[in-house]
Length: 231
Image (cartoon, rainbow, N blue to C red; front, top):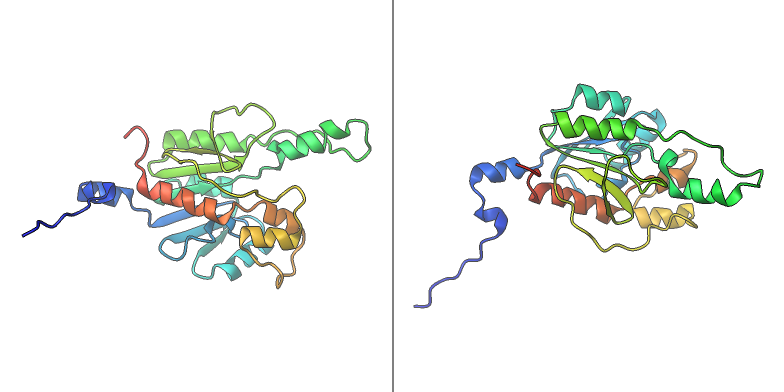
């Protein structure tokens, strides 16, 4: 008789204790916005979304009714609940680091009355990275826009974003983010989120703040399948 051939995946080859360690059940979604990163996550993980803006948090709750939504300062909440999750995802405000704001809004308009004003980079970004690097016992990832300056802590550029994490994030092929000339309609299509029924201001910026759905899923899968670096 012909012997049966079994294909063993890397996941299956791991000891049971290691597979349990790789599991992601509880996710903290800091600076959640309207949940662009979690569009393709489904309900297989329990998501706690932390968002400071009550109006935006209400939209998130309507879009993702199975998630727990906490209206709070994400920066402080992280400090107080650091090791209560299997994965921490943080996407701090990016405007003060933005290449587009600096290069197009300031450098290209130095002599124009419409140029943007100088702005301190919000260094809470690096506070969180350092906190997570040294105190977090679970998996974590911090996402932001690729800055106009040399990052103060080296990150990894993937899919038009810069990432800091304690697990490997592999490259992913993705289409243009559609930000520069994007309209509310085109951005809703690109981000997979329909805000048409919500009476909320600055929809274009809210959508621009969203991580692309396929990128959000890719990073979650990387967190699930890759061990903590250095362990």
